[in-house]
Length: 251
Length: 280
Ligand SMILES: Nc1ncnc2c1ncn2[C@@H]1O[C@H](COP(=O)(O)OP(=O)(O)O)[C@@H](O)[C@H]1O
Ligand SMILES: [Mg+2]
Image (tube, rainbow over all chains, first blue to last red; front, side):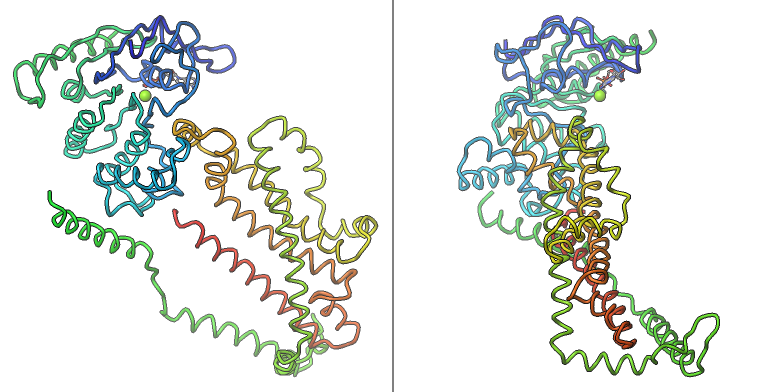
């Protein structure tokens, strides 16, 4: 298995003797090349699970393995797109994209070439000399994804990447993400709270329960791409997922 | 898409961004009478001074003892032709520059350490809190004993003036670095030591500059104090010496020179900051 999570638990200390059980017995496998969405009520531990796979958080119990090895630290192998993108504000778009290449032992010339390639691929030409504060939300996100992907990670982890965007832009960037996914052959694990988005994009949807989070249901999406948001099977899946989530919120 | 088409699009979009960039950078220059008001206020000050001297006001303050602004200005203009005046300025400026450079290279690493490590913070904290509130002038006697030359003791005082503001601002900046920058940097393969230069330092730069502005002010006060108390050269020394020689115009010129230099140093720091920090 590409990602293999076995009975992972995570409890946070909140205050001196109060604890929050965020994740309980998470067991989850992901194969290479899959597009997975994590969906669940807010506070159920989606971000925590994603951070555990990235290596930002460690499980208290259980194991998180990536390509057969236990995850112990952050690594460029597992690109992580932060919820607010975490672009370095003192670097331009180009410099942000180029940031990690130096540590991959690339020569200056190679670094430049790769950065140029990704600037073009992500349609950032002309904006390459701008600083993050001068960018729109969509451009920031493309820069963040380009910055991670130019290091050729096998896995792309994204925490609610489209949450802050308006509907039209969201649709556009979803298309973009699918295009990149097809182009780069990465495995994508994305947290979302948008049911429609998860159906539109994913091969498989992981529905999590409310706190403490565990895997409530896994749902394969058998629809052909490109998908239509109005086709009957799409609507049926949406209904089913809405029902599953409603149960969690009402509990 | 063929190449020609693409370059057209590139040109168009870069033109778009350039125009956007310019509109961001363009500053509105206000000439709506503010220059006039500023000029008038300086003029009023000079006239009030002149009148107070000429009419020999002796109460509540003894303005009658002062030279008139015209006398001061004439002497100042004469001074502009003399190399000693520039020498004084150069010497004092050199002392400040040296002090602040020393302070930078000491305060930034220590401040970074204190901000990132609790142990380092505890190590320096008590000593720091003891020495920091001491006014620079109160260091002078002991500094004179410690250093073999007056020059080095004056430079030490200017160093101290810049050291504490820089230390505090660096420490606080290091504590405030958003954790996602650190995570992002590691996620991009940059390990801890290179990230000090590539992430921590630039993230802290705006606050370090604030420390610089405060520090250079304190340094300037330090150098003047040192020169007045113990120096044989420098603008502070000349200003104090003039008083003893009853050359009051010279004292006033010294005062104004010190003030003007102080504000031009802050101006220089602000300019450097603007050039280096274009990302705000
Ligand atoms: N560093 C932390 N310290 C304490 N509690 C935390 C921390 N991170 C997350 N939590 C708690 O764990 C739970 C799950 O958080 P999170 O993974 O962010 O949920 P989600 O992303 O699904 O909204 C929440 O109740 C949150 O308050
Ligand atoms: Mg979250």
